[in-house]
Structure formats: structure tokens, C-alpha cells
Image 1 (cartoon, rainbow, N blue to C red):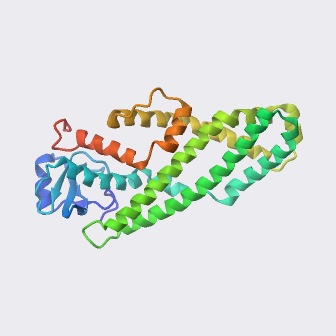
Image 2: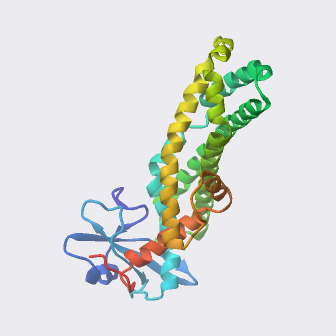
Image 3: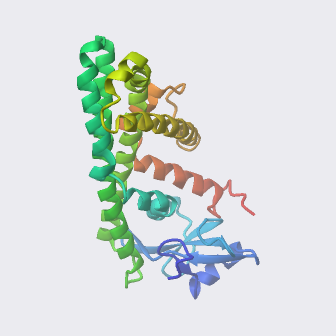
Length: 308
């Protein structure tokens, strides 16, 4: 399989090339998935693609192993769910590779160690409210370390399963391998969501107070001899910057859930987003959203299909 194609897909051939032909324009190519087992039957997802961009879906259908187009929407959805799960890797490949390098002691412990010293030295001088903020920020720093370490492990596991999927010698997806891949992808999404949730929660409960405390001249004089104390301030600046970018993306994701899943949880607030990230959103919601979107916009048999 060419690395230029979507993961596990290959160019259409034989009866499948004939099946997709009526839906393919002269300026499009086409490719197909491996066989997907659904209730004892075997199916392939076929799609049209750009000549140069072989990753993105344009138009798609599902065929049985005899090359007959499947009109059953439920079977189509079940096949698409597998493909959308595979797309999770394709879309997040850069982030997955980046997080392989995170969660190391030398990246987190200097900040945690410095902040513990700052907290110990300034604690007797601060109000109960400010001490509570300092305690929560220490909890946040430890959680970021823990979560990033776990994300590094799950990213490595996910890549291992991706390598196995890419090197499969059979023409049918192995159900156990797909299940293992989906389980790890699901765990990784929950870790990413908890990482976001604790970031926003620290912004509400602690980060501003901690920044103000460390920016107070009389207090700053008492901690300037602490090795790497400035790491804490740099980390706060970075967290604020990342938080703004993530919030913007979260609002857009919420809009997509509302549009494609009829999800309505009222007006947006950071507190509500924290709850949704921890207790509502999961990878199945993301997959169902994308499957619904595909069915309406890309499935050639959809009554609403309009892709040219």
C-alpha cells in the first residue's frame, strides 16, 4: 500500500473499480478499504479521491464482496464507523508523534519542584484564598505530568497498532486488532479531554491568582533565589496561550456536535465545558458525528447527497 493513501486503503481494482465508476468524475481517482466483517458478511468502503490528495474523502459507497453496491444505511454506517476510527490516527498523526516526546521527568519535575518551594516560602504570608489557589495549581502541575506521561504511553500503543494494521497480510481487517486499536484510541481521547479540563479548571481556580502573587514585588523578592522560579511564570504564560486556542476549537467542536448529533447543552461556559469534557464527550460521539456528516454529505445514496 502506498504511503500516499489513507491508512489501509489501496487503489480500486476489478469489480470494485467498476462499482465506483458511475460516481467518479474523470478528474478523480478512487480507492477502497480492506474487507469489513458485519454480521457474517464482508464489505468494502469505496470512495473517490483527488488526483493529488489521496487522504480526504469526496464521494463514497459500500460494496459487498461481490461488488454489489449496498443500499442498507445501517450496514453502511457500521462500515463507516471503522473507517472513521482509522481516520482518528490520520487526522491526529502529528499530535500523536509529538506526544511521544512528552511526559518525561526532566520536562515537568523542575517546575513542580520550584513551585513546591515557592508555595512553602510564601504560604505563611498569603490569605486562605490565595493558599487554596496555590494548592490547586500544584495539583494541576502534577496532573499535567501524570496525564502527559499516560498520553505518551497510549500514543506509542496506538502507533504500534497502526503499524500492525499497515502491515496486515490479509485482505480483511482483523476484528481483534481493530478492537484493540479502538480501545487505545478511546483511552487517548479521554486523556486528551482530561488534559483540557484540568487546564481550564486551573485557569478558573488558580492561574490568575498565582500569577498575581508572583508578580507582587514584595513577594517576588522572597522567591527570586529559588532555582528556576521563572519556569513557573513561563509555564503560566504558555498555559494561558494554549487555553485560548483550545477554547476556540472547543466552541467549534460543540457547534459540530449540535449540528450533527442534535446535542444541545445550552449556552457555552468554561464550567460547562469542563463537565462535558469529563463526563459527556467521548470518541464514540466524535465518530457518530463524523459518520452522520459523511452519510449526508458524501454517501452517494443519501437523499441529501449533493457533492459534485
